[in-house]
Image (cartoon, rainbow, N blue to C red; front, side, top):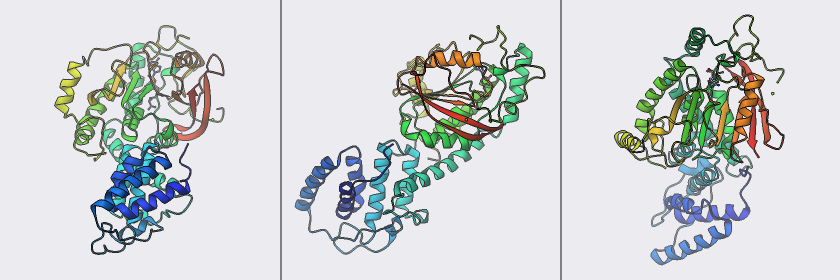
Length: 429
Ligand SMILES: C[S@@+](CC[C@H](N)C(=O)[O-])C[C@H]1O[C@@H](n2cnc3c(N)ncnc32)[C@H](O)[C@@H]1O
C-alpha cells in the first residue's frame, strides 16, 4: 500500500500551500487529492497567480512541526492566514483528504480527523508531523476513534440479540427441521477483531463495492461492515429463517437509529485454532465432516452514511420504483454504486450455494464449522468472482481447483466469540 512517505516535492507543496491559503487549503487539498506532484505544482502556481492579482501580500507564517501547533498564535492584521501553526491544520486537512482519496481512510475516519483538526483536539498533540510514522499515527488515531464510536452503535443494536440468543434460535430451528449437518453450528464474530480485519484490508476494499457474508446468522458481520466501511451494498445470506428474521430486526433498528441520522450529515492460522470445538458444542456423537444429503450446503453523524442524500421516504419510493422486494437469486439485483440507500444492507434467506454472489467484491465466511465438502463447493463458486475480489474465511482457507485461482495475502489470528480463529485473506487472481 502506498501510505509510505510524502516526497520532498509533495511536502514542500503542502507547506507552501498551507502558508498561502490558510483555511482555503481544504478546498485546495480536494483539488490536489488525486494529482501528481507536478500537476499540483502547476495548479498551485495558477492559484498563486490568481490570488496575487486579487489581494495584497500574504503574511508568511513559520511551518509548525507538530499538529498541536494548530491553535497557537494569532492572526497578523491583514493576513489571510492566522499566524503560527496554521500550516499544521492545513497540512492535516490536506493529508486527510489525500489518505481518503488513496483509500486509506473511510469517510467516517476522514470526518473524524477533520473534526479533530478543526477543534485543535489535544488528541493530536502526540502526533509529530515530521516523524516518519506521521501517516500511520494519523490513520491509527482516526481508526481507533471510528471503531470506538461504531462499537457503541453496534452494541446498542445488538442489545436485544445476544450471541446466546443466536445460538438458541439456531439450535431450535435445526432441531425442528432435523438438520444435523455441523456446518450449521452457530458462532459469531467479535466486533473488535472484525474491525481490525477491516482496518488491515482498508486499502484493498472498494468503497463502492459489494460485501457478502456467507452464512450471516443474526447479521453481525454485515452490520459491522456497514458501520466500519463505505461499501455500497452489503448482503447477508443465511439458511435458517429464524436467524434471518433476527438479523432483519436488527436492520430495522439500524435503519431507524443510524440511517435516519445519516441523511442529515454533510461530507463529505490451522491446527492450533481452538475454535471449532468452542464455537458451539456440536451435537453429541456427530461428526462435523459428515453431511446430511437433504440439507443445503451438502453439494459437495452519529453514525453517518453518505451514500445518498435521499430522505427515508424518498428512498422507499425510489426502491419501489426499482422493484425492490422482488427476490432474486442474484445479489446483483441492482447496479452496485447506484443502489438506493434502502438497499444498502439486505439479509437473504436461502442456501448460499444456490444464490449468485459472483459480483461481490468482498466475501466473508465464518467457516470455522464448515465441512471440507462445503468449503470445496464455496471455493468453486468463489472462482467465479472477479479478479481482485477478496475472500476472508475464518479457520479454513478456500480449497480452489488450482493454486492459480487465489493468492493468499495473509493469515492472522484473531479473537472471536468462541476463542481464537485464523482469518485467511485470499484475493482472486
Ligand atoms: C458460524 S455462523 C456465522 C454467523 C455470522 N456470519 C457471524 O460470523 O457472526 C455460520 C452460519 O452459516 C449458516 N449456514 C451454513 N451453511 C449454510 C448454507 N449452505 N447457506 C446459508 N447459510 C448457511 C449457519 O446456519 C450459520 O448461521
